[in-house]
Length: 246
Image 1 (cartoon, helix red, strand yellow):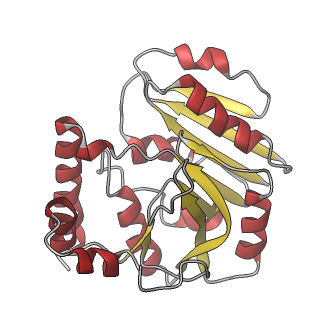
Image 2 (image 1 turned 60 degrees about the vertical axis):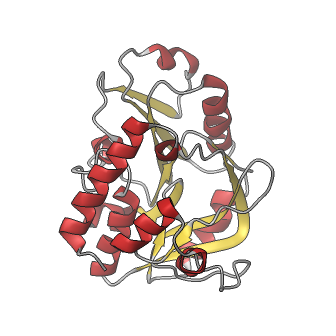
């Protein structure tokens, strides 16, 4: 009934185990694809389960391209794009599936996302503009950042944002396949913003559903590492070249 994919790259094993176990506790027929971009397949030894299929790539081909590796394999009704640093209870996915089944215009659904200390993560955004990305880095206008994150909206109620960050994206598999998954030109960052634009093109929506919640570690890597910042910059150039600056 449901498949999920996690892209791996030299992950912290204890954090990853919590994510994998969260998914495996879901009381549905399921398959989890672990797609490993690490240089060595050492992570395979930790995950021996008939519900898991481990795929070793052997090189870092990027986030979106790795998720697309299983695009032709999945025949489930629903497919979950899952980060390797997420925890959730067993009722989360069944609740979200019920919402997806009842809403024909929605392609994917995301629950409320919190930090481990229970503080809210603002995963809903307006479609990014060039100024928004600069503003988030330089903090030119806090008011604009808040508007961009829908903070003037009641975030305890479901709604349809332009763009939802991709740590937990539960898709109708047919829609995920119809838009051919992620644009593989993005090595890292912006692929979730891009796929939200692609959903707009098929006249579907993205649903934020805060009636259930997950915990996301969210390392904010691009603000701490020059290499990751450069990846983010490269992806932003690709994104705005494709979709325009507004």
